Image (cartoon, rainbow, N blue to C red; front, side):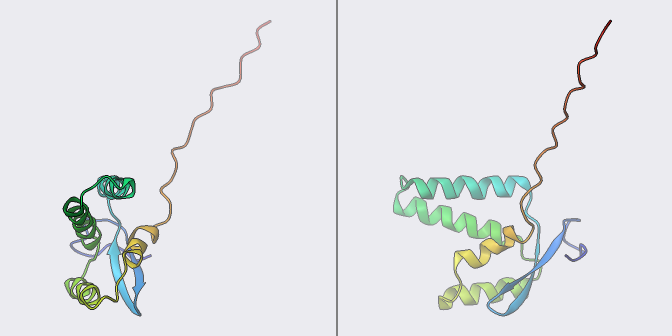
Length: 116
């Protein structure tokens, strides 16, 4: 875990290894994660036409690229993708690096009061 750097908007950052290079990524916000999940569900459903599916994949890549802190790291990832050396699972590590989101804590009610 690293400390936030300027431009990170105070979000936590982590280092993810991609093809032997250390990439600093910032944590995605909840809304970005929701859109990634939404697009993945549409693609999994198989109902999207080819052009719509490509558009959704592009949107997913844009969200994942927004997590990369350094511009030269984004260029590196783009070069890998163009060369066919980058897979989506490599970029999905940008999400899993931060672990599972915490589940909300449930408050338990008080035990019943015994009245005499």
